[in-house]
Image (cartoon, rainbow, N blue to C red; front, side):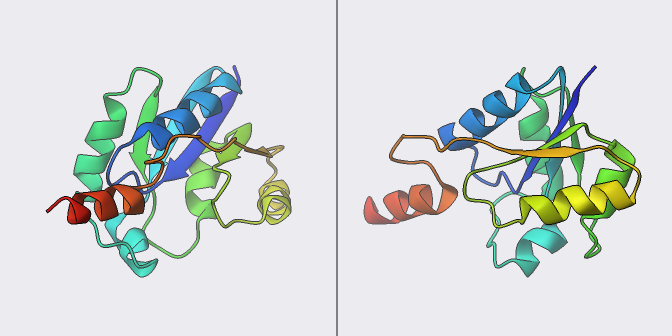
Length: 139
């Protein structure tokens, strides 16, 4: 069984997220989605609408998701990777992570994890910030 790990904030669920998760699932058999903790999301400047438990519940309801968990709040993203032990980590086309660095850190933990980038979603409202902007414009 190929375990795929996808991650994100998933504050305002939209079709870009669905595209990312569907493509992530296509790389393996079992999709684990890591929801950014409130601490992590806020540290990266996110002004959250939903808390981490609400975001986890939303993602858990998607039929393509086999398991959803909340990531660790500390600054070491690899703590969650160590626990999940994914065969593949998927990153969205716009996620600002170094693929090679992630693979090397996984090797140091004894994991043979590979990183795959997903393709962009072509829809207009493909990000939470664009959805927020659209809502503000319509008010």
